[in-house]
Length: 242
Image 1 (cartoon, one colour):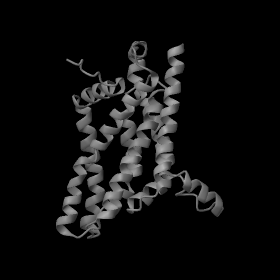
Image 2 (tube, helix red, strand yellow):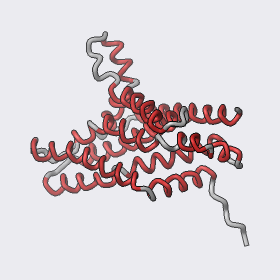
Image 3 (cartoon, helix red, strand yellow):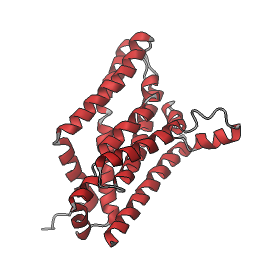
């Protein structure tokens, strides 16, 4: 008989992180808060503006996720550093890349889980209106790319410190900067506004959420995610050499 195939170390780390996360009340508190905040945005549009659509819900997600994703990631490496278990982990037959990818995948899955209850908003729109499927699908696709990028930023922040709160306050402003960049710079020359808009996660997210899948927008999110994951790997490598 063939020996059972061993799982990749990154997948083992991901499963461990997800099991610990969903076994704690924090996961459900965060999901509940996200549902309340996003629900307010949706029902304000639905009842006050009398529009059965998700445009306002998606348009505010970059700012909303700038707080919630750092809250999900802030403990992932900071707690390992505080307890000293990160040194033990890195002495096992795993690489800094394995640890980074395992933590990142856990953060991404946890972030994506926040969106599951929001599918009720889609059902509500379909029952009481006739929304265009393109922007809805594009909105969720764009949100998944946004969650991936913010998860990488959050992981980078938590790799810098042993304190979870400090990790949150590092990641949150970075995510907000990418969300707001280009939105409040109308007083600058047009060419500079265009440059800032290119680096703005919000502008690329809005493009995808309109149902227009442009490879330039996808490449932006993939590059942003890869950049912060690479920085995290280098920080972990530096820590393991000390």
